[in-house]
Length: 344
Image (cartoon, rainbow, N blue to C red; front, top):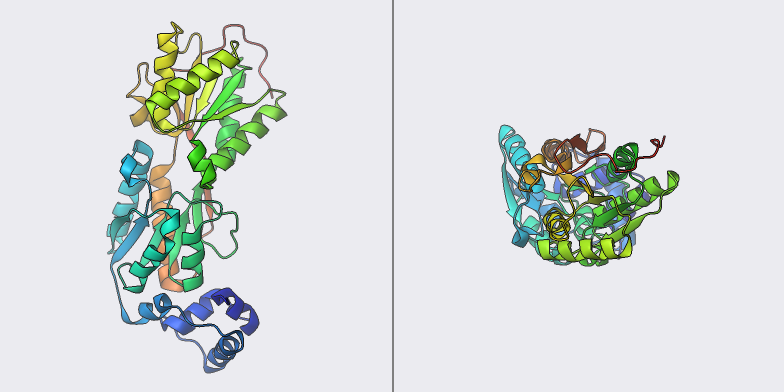
């Protein structure tokens, strides 16, 4: 089946120009329109109703597609939503949540066709994401909060997971830690292709290996009980374990509980560093977690600005953005008991 990109390639125009010709949102010269129409005829391309609806419907709603609403909005996501909603209001829009999974791309597109939103912010992006693919092919304005495997022509902002993992390993290595495990999101998140799970896992493995350390990573369910079980597994497998990096807010509380149950002191016996989290979440732990603060507020702001640029111009006129997490000291990291010289 031919796509808008195929039409753009054959007509020798940009994807956004094809979108303008279909939606009527910006003028297109007669000669360019003729080339686009000739390409559509040759390819047998049928314009999607979503693109046509943009010409006749106006909405002051921006839709945030967030499939994990049933888990509630954690501290990191709440910061993003608050910031995105504020920036949207400043530009005359309202932000609404659409709780659709990656498997519900058709339902998202149906709402866009009905003119229910001027544009879509897609969160919890998978490496291969049908929601993004269908929005791209339809010509509907969208921006990813995250990154698919394919990035060409796709607007996005994201956390720099690779740098964050490297910074986390370096921080612990500088304190003499050599046996550092990584507790990641669930096996289900990996099976669904959830991009942060893979990017952080790869970043941790590279960071450990280039410092001559052995990576030990486990996937864990998104509950405190799953965190308890994962901590027990790690401690039984590696008695020398001195630090755990976690990227799983709910499971981290279970890790702390399991260590305390075993009579191990946090941080004197085992340090815990929670990445892609927030100090607000960290304060729920005893002692308060040391965190790598996820840039939720900045991503919310940048995501909305890029989406508004797409709505106005067809393509964002702002560069794509990678933002690393920043260290927030708490009470769960200390120097290793028998520190060795810090690694470069």
